[in-house]
Image (cartoon, rainbow, N blue to C red; front, top):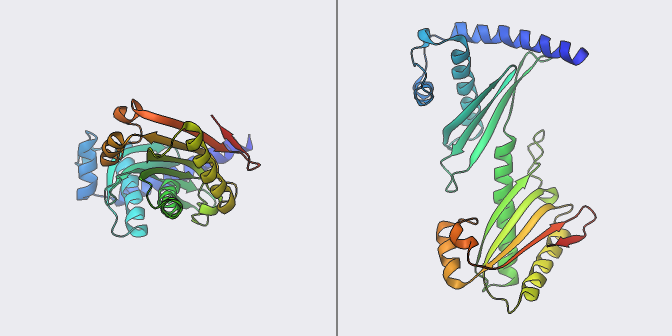
Length: 254
């Protein structure tokens, strides 16, 4: 009952804040107009209903947060979700060659009487990039002649401290490699050595580690598109080995 009361109180307080924001706005800026047009909503502020006005205002608040926190980065609008005491903005980072979608959120803090912002997913994107660099360096040092590319996704970044804790990360790693193995046993042995390196250098690393081995022609096609899951790649895989590092640092292969 107390939780319901607290939520109701927060909704009422946030609603009053929204009314104030709506009353203080007289027209949309160019960015808001582009997004409203994309959503099929009028760009005439006086003709918008309160929910549309609230959405336009919160979208701009979230964009302003991104602009201030990541100067020089560009984010293309993808989607927006409005909640009773918060909102999520989904954007694509167009200033990065990978063009990945990221999320930024705001939530009404009834104790502080203000919005709190979070961009956990973007922090995870940055962590994935940093972790990918370490893996590339390790593979190149282990075998300078290896031809490969990676798909690395890291999760569970500490959003409170904004620390990219790559030494205690959870996620997935996919290695696509041009075939250099005489047998599947040899490929499995390679993945075993890679997983041993992860355990030795990255405490409690979890998730799935996948090794995809293809022939030279398929590798060049896959590398050009950088698509791990392309139909062309999937139909011409020589070895496809999955592994998982368990909580006790034991390995599971399948």
